[in-house]
Amino acid sequence: MPKAVRRKRTPPRWNRLNREIDACQKCPRLIDYCREVAHVKRRAYIHETYWGGPVSNFGDPYAELLLVGLAPGAHGANRTGRMFTGDRSGDWLYKALYKAGFANQEKSTHLQDGLQLTGCAITNICHCAPPQNKPTRDEVLTCQPWFEQLVAQLPIKVFLAFGQIAWRGVIDFMKDTDVYSGPIPKFGHGHSFNFADGRILLGSYHPSQQNTFTGRLTESMFNSIFRKANRLLDRH
Image 1 (spheres, helix red, strand yellow):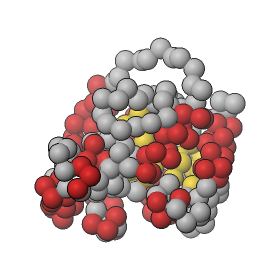
Image 2 (image 1 turned 90 degrees about the horizontal axis):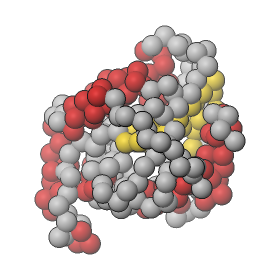
Image 3 (image 1 turned 180 degrees about the horizontal axis):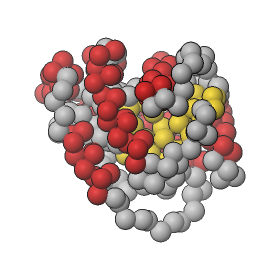
Image 4 (image 1 turned 30 degrees about the horizontal axis):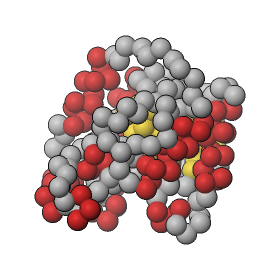
């Protein structure tokens, strides 16, 4: 269970970056899709007002652990306006974060549910929900400056990438900053890679239903990733 901590003041640049992401219109295909989903809705959420646009970063603006996902879920974060909130992936993630001491509660349902993260923040390689959950390479690259600005703000020690696209996104960022120039290290659940500047990339299967329903990712496997992150951060 997480310890009670005194909340630090949120830096203005954190809020400014999130406002800029929320207002982004750089990928017309993605913006149109987010709005279409918000208009048509899923029957279970027919009476809800969808967010229907880019979803900004969430968590501790002083985080040493940065979780990197793929993109908002069409009826999850694209509905609620917060990453990994309102779908099965989020159910898995926040339960694991709570057990590992990064979250003050194990459930995340909506923006005003009281959830707070300590020591970690969450971002996505693509900030808009893409059709079939598959952003194009150009769309991922268009979002990369948001990732660069976020990383510049945080005292990151560990990147935790959910899935191969997020793994590659972190590597691409490190190459652009001349921290790393080699081949892309092999992605795998529990795999890690140390960069020359001391930061570490840790890999995990994404907690999507495709992985959790099939047993490719189990709760034990997922919890072990956060135990490893805590060890790398020297928290436990």
